[in-house]
Length: 591
Figure 1 (cartoon, helix red, strand yellow):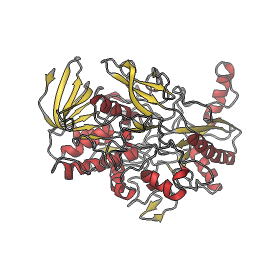
Figure 2 (cartoon, rainbow, N blue to C red):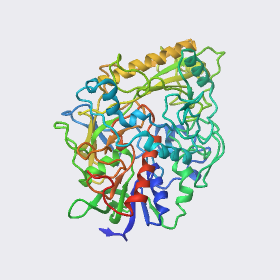
Figure 3 (cartoon, rainbow, N blue to C red):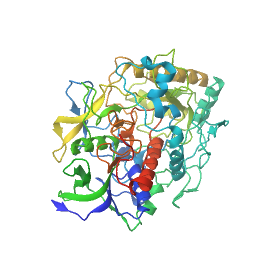
Figure 4 (cartoon, rainbow, N blue to C red):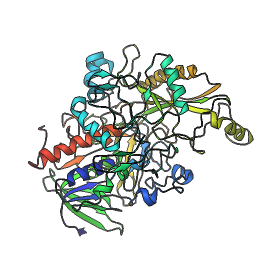
């Protein structure tokens, strides 16, 4: 065992939240070390054009993703089933290397609705506690939207988020989202220009009395300089966002917003190819003394530290807490324990929309999140759920994020899967098709959780994380309802043909079908150590000098993309560390 010189702070994982923690804590003068399991990656040379626009390498073979041969997860549908390894990317995508999933995301940057942060209390008050099924165990976050709003804005300002406000200090603004929580000011930059498919969608939704608005986007609509002095360039709508790094310096990522400044800080250091295997505890088990990791030469290394920030991907955060023995593992039979509790995902549906030859959609013009229009009327609790019998909702989006020939090419219903007829349909429909889809919430349940697999291990001999997950009736009802509203919009668009992908009762969770990488829960935050692993500042209830950031803190999954909320929660956490914890190390909230 190699023992390194102690540092003040060690950060485990170096994506969005690790970079935010790094730059905010480096400003205090503390000695900061970040450990990243992957390699160093930056816009130049790693994402430079034209080799970056290689769909086979990045989109299909997953050049930026974690190698599943070294570490993966196992998956089963129900307690008592045998889990099997996730061997080929499908349902979700693990980030790898410096920047993590913040490199290859699309850039959708939403705030939560106010009720999302107090969901259990809100649903109980509006509909009664019996409105929720007995096995649903949704929870509040332990803080309110008004408390989090300044930190949500701080993350938007960092990213230069493009959008149009719908509610400024309680005043509803035309053209924005009228259902959003109040914000202090508009987005840092105006919306990205609509694609033609998005305009057709918005016109149809508006004709039906809905309230379309431009999707909040971290694809920059114009040149922007953030508070760190880092500059982003305007997006050229090339369509290579999801699964790709951005060669234009246009998509907000750790590389384009933070690292040019952080990497120059004399009190900050980064070690790549450093795979953390556990958080070390003192003899009491109540204080972390640092971490142990395996370096590029395969050597075990002990890194002492006064403060441990766990900021890896959601599932990796859960696994590290379980491997380190911090907190009580969740038991679905008793409902007790907190580590691994409340795993959730998201449920989507989609419609292919096909027009005649005189409607030129040109799908190759697209961005990961810009140029798309959104309908939020049926998301969260923006409508009365009483007659529908489900909790949660989804936003509906229209337009295209690109037209990559392998993964984004759609053909009309009834087209063969290969051969001359498929080629003919692809050629005739490519320039004249767009997509409408729903992006829905998934609640947490007693029998949906994460633990350590008793059979399978990673390349270092440690147990893999095991996922126990399948859909529940609540989500089938939600998706059917919102998809029906999406179909109303599509009919108003007057296409010549449509296709539909919708998960129905009886359809099991299928890991072969990609939906989102928005996996949540397992180290959730809340107001009590009996029901949560972290307090409102993402500090461990059990080990006060361990903070855990990211979507692992979500008590259930909202209908929005999670990154905006993740960033806001991280800024809330690091402010508490800087202003309170460092002055008086100990629990920031008394149990």
